[in-house]
Image 1 (cartoon, rainbow over the protein chains, first blue to last red):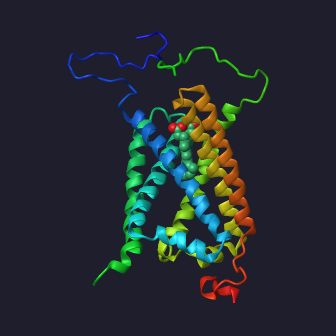
Image 2: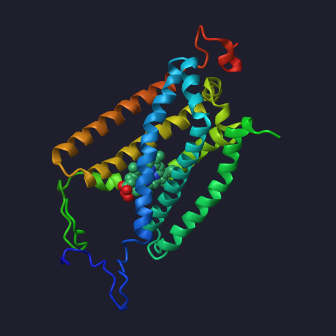
Amino acid sequence: MSDKTAGTLAPHRSRTKVPEGTLYRGREGMWSWVLHRITGVAIFFFLLVHILDTALIRVSPEAYNAVISTYQNPVMGVGEVGLVGAIGFHALNGIRIVLIDFWQVGTKYHRLMFYTVLALWLVLMAGFVPRHLMNVFGEYWVG
Amino acid sequence: MSLTIENPRAPRTRRSPGGVNWEKWGWVYMRVSGVILVVLIFGHLFVNLIVGEGVKAIDFAFVGGKYANPFWRIWDFAMLWLALIHGANGMRHLVNDYAANEKLRKLLLLALGGSTAVLLVLGSLVIFTFDPCPANSPADLLPSFCS
Ligand code: HEM
């Protein structure tokens, strides 16, 4: 190990053969970062497309309605669940990052806050997904 | 690309002594814009996807109805600038992290800056020059207040 690394390796106390990893790697800190990064990039590319499709309201009602109707297609409807899921995680975890940076005990509770983010995300999705899928698939509903 | 983490106790190096610390303000911007975006984006998703018929209800007349009120134009304008600059700055971090080749990195940053500027101008023009009742359009596609 180079003396330049920041001393993040966990002390090897146990004698098990299972690799112990480090305090950061493979744990909540790393996975929250990975998810924050992936969701951030995904939302960014959606935003590029979304600005362009919305710009069609300046072209003509026909052009805008044609493009927006693709968002109402069931396949896209399922994609919107993924999109809202990505934004929901990024937003909640973003608040967690802000709390880690500015709240005195933020770094102490960062792991607890990560599980809180996951729990709030589940609540958010439980509220959104049924309502959204009913809107998208409502017309295919028989009964 | 360096594979070791910088020593956290290493003395800080300033790119431009006495100048503006842009990286610090970028860091602050990510946090401030993020907190405001929570309100703007969740409000946006709620009004467009949850209220009424959700996505099914979105069409030209729906947008025209919203933009009849300057409140939603200002809402969308703020969301456009805050989110696009936040996202572009985040993408700049990724380019700096992963583009190993210096020429490629410069090119990607240029493309990122260029497309961001174009979309900011385009989006702002669309929001503020939008006409909910364009002439010669079939009335059934327009908001009800047009006729
Ligand atoms: C919903 C509200 C949002 C919140 C609370 C939020 C919060 C944050 C925070 C705190 C960071 C970390 C910045 C840093 O480490 O210096 C970040 C990074 C990022 N955000 Fe957001 N953000 C939000 C919305 C968005 C949107 C709409 C986009 C896309 C247009 C986006 C794209 C990104 C990207 C690409 C990164 C960089 C990720 C990385 O460096 O690993 N975010 N966000």
